[in-house]
Amino acid sequence: MVALRLQIAAALLAIAVFLPLLGIPASPLPDTPPHLPWSSRPGAAALLWLVYMTDLPSWASAAAALMLHALNSALLAALLPVLFTVRAAVLAALMYAAHPLLADTLALPSLAATLPAMALALAAALAFLRHRPWAGAALAILSLPFEPAAAAIPPVLLLLAGRSASGRALYWLMAAGAAAWLAAFRSSWPQLAGEWPWFGIFALRAVFLALFPLALTPAPDLRVAPEQAALAAAAVAAVGWIAWTAGRRHALGAWFLAAIGLLASVYCLPEGGGARSLALPLAALAAFVALMLEHADWRLSAIYISVLALLSFSYARLWRDPVAIGMEAVRLAPRLPAPALALAPRLPPVQALELLAEARRHAPPGPELAAAYGRALLRAQRPNEALAEFDSALESNPRYYAALSGRAAAWLALGQPEAARADLARSLAIEPCSVEARAALLRLGGPLPSDSHCAWTRAQRRALAGATSRR
Image 1 (cartoon, rainbow, N blue to C red):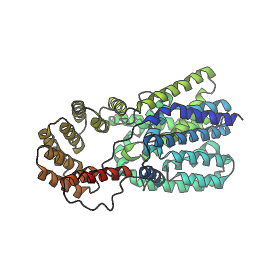
Image 2 (cartoon, helix red, strand yellow):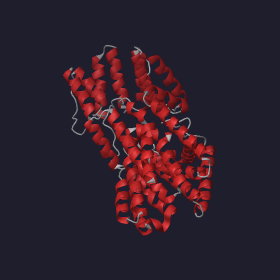
Image 3 (cartoon, helix red, strand yellow):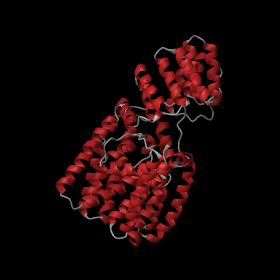
Image 4 (cartoon, one colour):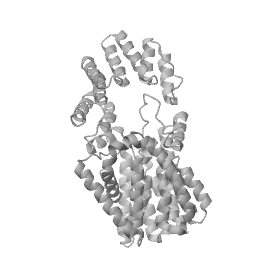
């Protein structure tokens, strides 16, 4: 009866604190078909494809993510009493349900599509602990196409429960999970090759935010000086070793070591754009924190859970305003160009130009910022200056099709449709699936390349149909 009440309480809390996410506005229409992670996360890719093809409103997608989080919270509430005392299980389940670190995962569709992996992995863990190894193995294998980091769950179970968790079946499952993880790692290797030195910063940040979730941002800046990265890695290694030795005697060390392993797996397999879901590692971190608070005054623990819930509700509300969440991302990561590039189109031209000028002072030269600056100049009715920016972007990368499309808009503003038509044709020769370039060339009456291989979303097809009707 206690376990059932805990499951219901965790699910209701998970929904209540993140309810403002239902008001997230629709994302801007992407210029090209969305890149779906078929090679690394085919299950998540299929789920995203279904969302895009059915053209669900943003609130429906957010509601589905919210229901998955409620399910995951209930499953964790069912799992933890098997491993913990009732008090620690209650703390861990409620902390996970209400933790602000999950807001980004629920708000971003590419991360929310990995949530079924959490449900399947938790269900698999329950099956193993209830001595149903075949059901556990089937559920665990089903979780891998949604999130290959779930491959870390079998060794975590062996670490925490050993033979009582159907250990022999877990050894075979570890081999299957390792194969799936390595297959996904092949597609993430190019990105990881440039980012691996900052894993220590990522892990320390995640542990700190699990305890004190302040200054949250969907785009953290992990870049630090080499000596700082080395110190962070050494700190994580030292704490991991302490957790390994302590884990043989106490569950506290075992859960912390599990969290480090899950963080490493998530870091090595980022989503598109470098985003990383902390849904899996947070389950271990919540258990670790709950064990630390197990003997604290229950009133202090209740205050801690209440503060987490209030922070989650506040952060979820921030996601309802794209400008507000963008400004927060820029404030917390001023050296990264990505937050400025995402925010600039939503600002008035003068503010966008100031933001991009500041970003250019910190970021290395590249075509993206130059093209974004050119588009802001176009909105400010300064086409001659915009033309120079697009030329600069093309000097950096002659095949940057977005700069060609932007330059075509500048030519049109200057009354030179033939030059615009030529740039649009060049842009489509590089990226024939660009919605902006195809729509602009349609309006100018130019010939279009074949679109037979363009996997556009329904919204993109609707935009192209509108451009055709206005031709």
